[in-house]
Image (cartoon, rainbow, N blue to C red; front, side):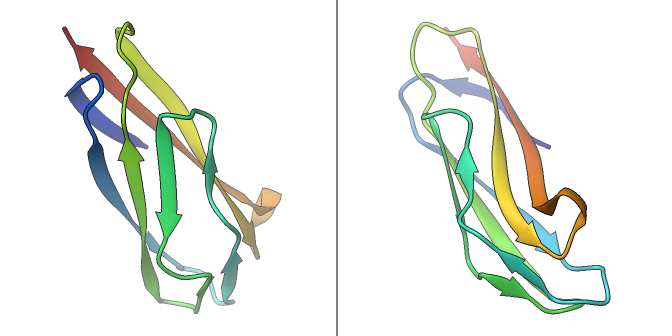
Length: 95
């Protein structure tokens, strides 16, 4: 999970998540998407060999008028159970 902590509405905040393939087979990633328009995700690679790492970059621009933000980043992955990586993302908005 990613917690952006206390953030101001309307400003851009970024976070990076390190993904590591701890399995024995390579993984293939599809384009990540989120459950909220305020949250954008991008990956640096589309395949990951066994033992390799890559960065998932998150950008959050929370909307005004909310006390909290919560959503998910969903990344299609071939080679894992359920064929998807689901990352919860949270933030508290400052007044």
